[in-house]
Figure 1: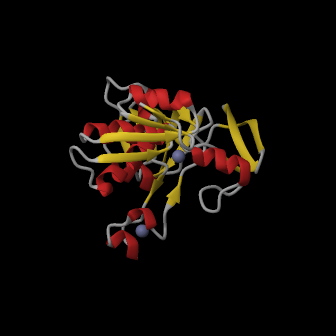
Figure 2: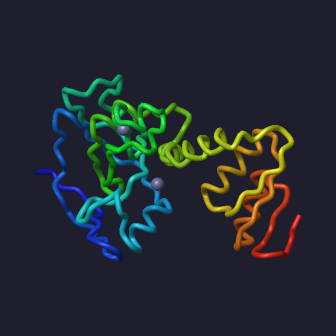
Length: 222
Ligand SMILES: [Zn+2]
Ligand SMILES: [Zn+2]
């Protein structure tokens, strides 16, 4: 049996890198060789205090990644082929519960989660393959593509906010998500003001198009 390295989450403040068998996908799964994996705020929170729904320890850890398809279960209905470079969201809605039928999939009562991105190989469930897996265009790197899911959250937020050309938009926090908001609100033609506790992050926000910057509480820097 081939072995791989895998980070296992045993509980708050307890993650161990272990040698485990490379998983064999069932007919309803695919196997992906991980090429890039990211750490998001949810991973940090999970590491510090666990997570009520996303992960039940002990479990492989990490949920934002991109990779190359190695094996495909026979029940999978998708145009994805072995060798394709792909990126997946870490959840998929059921499509038939009360909330899904209202078009509010993020509230799905039967949401499934994917874990195990901090690993050499990862299993992806049929529903995620069929609903939320995408082939990476040639000019996009694995590292860039792995940002798909957080970027999708920001695209959704921008759409919900109804930002228009010339609006003034305040963005609290210039972490990765805040910076994506800076970029996308800028593309909408907004005048952007960002607040953050870090001057470095505010400088990055400026490079990405923020016009006004607020450092901590007060100290206006333009
Ligand atoms: Zn995440
Ligand atoms: Zn649902």
